Length: 310
Image (cartoon, rainbow, N blue to C red; front, top):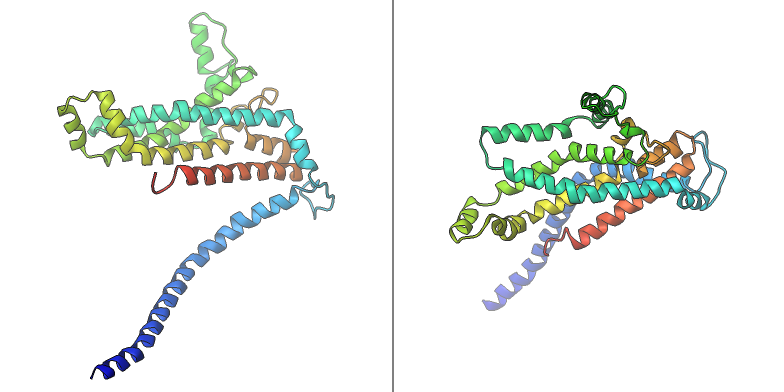
């Protein structure tokens, strides 16, 4: 009898293995079927354009016909020797720093004020989130009117107070700070809503228990709220940095990179010195550098910050 059972087990075991292999194959085929459209779209609209930009960056090309004037690394050499590009990089890094040190703390502070619930909190959430809903170009045009030294609101207020109206957008030393102010105003509502969602996931009982134990507001924030908000904060930091590296739509309607090319970001520099001047090879080199910077930051941030286990 035991021999018969052993024989049946020996016969049934390969059959079970074949069934498992078939089931695994079916799951893999199903997953591949779902991933194929996304993979094709990603390849068509991301991988191929990046590869083409990398190829064009080695040519001097105006965008018409097939590029034939091979210049090798000359576009990159000219790029890193360009003083306006250095200014654009510094401005982009300044946007990153201001976003991290001013915009995100402001968003967190306001999130803590409006996360308590109630009708008034809902109204203020809507008001603070409206700038993010407004289109970037529209926001830039609105603030360009506000900062206008002839007919703007700031100029009118200065004249009413008996001062000479400031021409902020025409001042090479102050124009970049107007852009920073608009960036903070435009995007803090987006990060505020991320923090509001994170705060709503924190049990109220934890804060009540901390208050009963005699913890101050700062201690409750430092040891309870902040650690539990860390997943939302690190996602917010990622969006802030990547968005700052790609800043473009606000800059162009405000200053167009001026005055005297002092307010360019990397993307507006690419548009002004590459696309509008029909120097597509040079613009492609700028795009490749920006792409490598974004990918490098993403990989490093994912490796050391966006880990499942800290």
